[in-house]
Image (cartoon, rainbow, N blue to C red; front, top):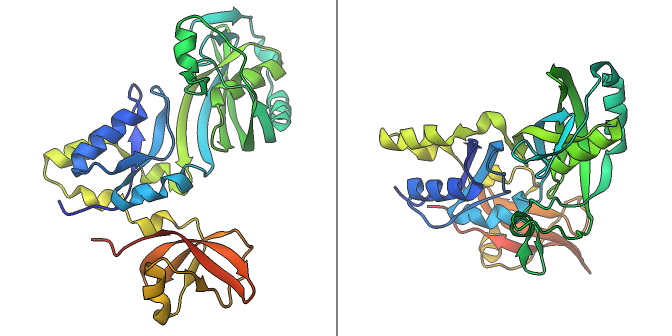
Length: 308
């Protein structure tokens, strides 16, 4: 297989870490340069974009983009891990008639916009060099600082009774670093019940959608049957479709590929904006818009050689 540069969108199965998926993609494509754009917990399924080759240089940009999840929150019990995998720590009988769509949507409105979350003890956050989940497994609970995250959308789906519990299904679009587990706990509290995240599936990560994702096992089957798996790789230029595109003058191409700044005549953009510079269909790089004495110019952040 010739060198591959691009993004393969994996539909991650439950029971596997994001690191496991990266290791298997690395073997399938025969390259060490592989990285994902945002960790999914082992039991969470869905969209996991994995960058290959020169596309690993996009990780820092892609991982900052909003994500969208389909969520099932269970009212009636809270757990040590804030999800279905933990031990129950609080239980309360739920009156299904008390959990209406109107009340749920009122609670949703309290959490829209920038909010503060306290990371759960069972998380990979480091405090004084130690992972919180390592401390939690030792039975140690420590004070954690709240973090600011943004909830862009909360869309109600349905309410369903599950024995003595009530399941609330909804979709959530949120910023990087949001703990949907913690959001479920906080939403439950707003509704008057202990709660935890029963199920989670990521349906969008940045520009990558669920419909573009290929199950990991399907990709591995394709390798076994000799199918060309590179057809599942999204080119770097397409993966950067979320950034504005600017076509440079032909005589500036060499200078841009050498990392030099270049003027941006006719561009209407704010200083500090990221853009992609192109020469025809060739992506030259990711650049930052700067303001100088002669107007706007592009300063190189990443320059991409012609892909092989």
